[in-house]
Amino acid sequence: MVSSKIKTNDIEDKLKNWLSNAQKVVIAGIGNPLRKDDSVGVEIVRKLRNKVSPSVYLIECETVPESFIESITEFKPTHILIIDAALLTIDLGSSKLIEPGQMMKQTAISTHALPLQIFCEYLAKTTSAKIALLLIQPKDTDFGEGLTAELRKTAVKLTNLLSKILP
Image 1 (cartoon, rainbow, N blue to C red):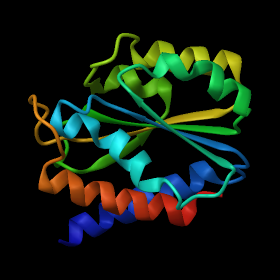
Image 2: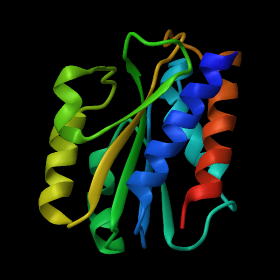
Image 3: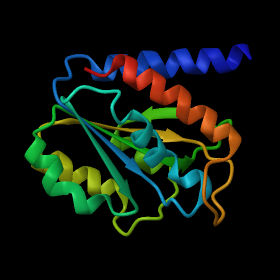
C-alpha cells in the first residue's frame, strides 16, 4: 500500500512539473476500446469531460491519433499529453511519464496504424508544444470491452489527478 502511494505521488510530481507554465493543453487518449485495458487512455479522456477548463482540448483518438493532427495543430497547444496503455514491465495499473525520445526504451502496445514515435515527431515539427506520454501498464489486452477492475481504479485516480492539476 505504501509503494502505491509513493508511485502516485511520484507521477503527481512529474505531471505537475511537466505541466508548469502550461497555457493550452491537448490530452489525447489512445487505445482500442475492443481490447479491454488497451482503452485506458480513451477512458481517462472520457472521464475528464466537463472536469477541465476550455484551455484543455480532450481528444478520444482511439486507434487513429494521426486523424487528429490538424485539430491539434489548430488548437496551438503549449503542451500535448498522450495517454496510452504500454507494456512497461512495472506493476499493473502503474503509470510512467516519458518524453517521446524515451519511447525506444519502452515496449508500447501498438494497436494503431501510425507508430506513436512518428506521431510525436510530426507533432513536434508542426507545433512548438512540449510533448509527453503518460503510459499505463495494462492487466489484460485481450478482445473484450471495458477495463479490468485494477485499470478502472487507475483511470479514476489519474482522472482525479489531472482534473486537479490541469490549467
